[in-house]
Length: 182
Image 1 (tube, rainbow, N blue to C red):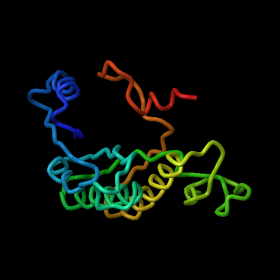
Image 2: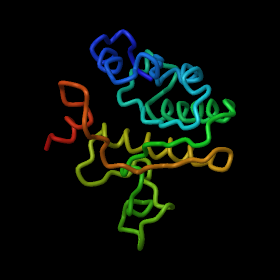
Image 3: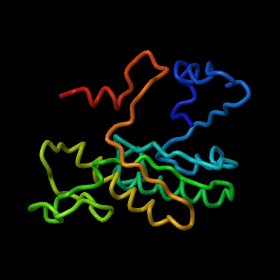
Image 4: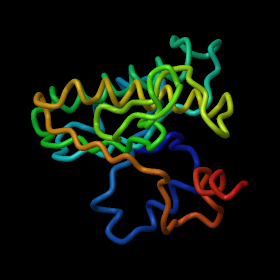
């Protein structure tokens, strides 16, 4: 799945992988139009969902913000997985920003951190920015929505601090570049 199939540089890198000519199929999809994922999901046994909207332009979207778009995306992708009849497991890259030891009112800390500890919407924390608050809200709401489907399909939620590692790109991926700024 690629965001822009016309990006010759990134698509070319994928097509240069071993056995790509026989084993790789690329689909273009827009996170703001989740129904575009259906064709890519058909026939798969496992789906890894890593995409999330990071910037939101309300005038170009039917969604009011990134949280609404992310939740709609999760709902649509899970429904595609279920209706495909072939997907056994959906693996979701959650974020550590969705879990918080802060009490609901933001005053003090909970005694323990477990699966019931969610980041409260609108509660600011140390070093928060508007972008980080929107991202935390989006990831929290979308993970909660996703977990509602556990049972209808096997859901694996990986709460990651950062997705990084080796890359085919000659430039640093945005998430890694963002994390290197202090």
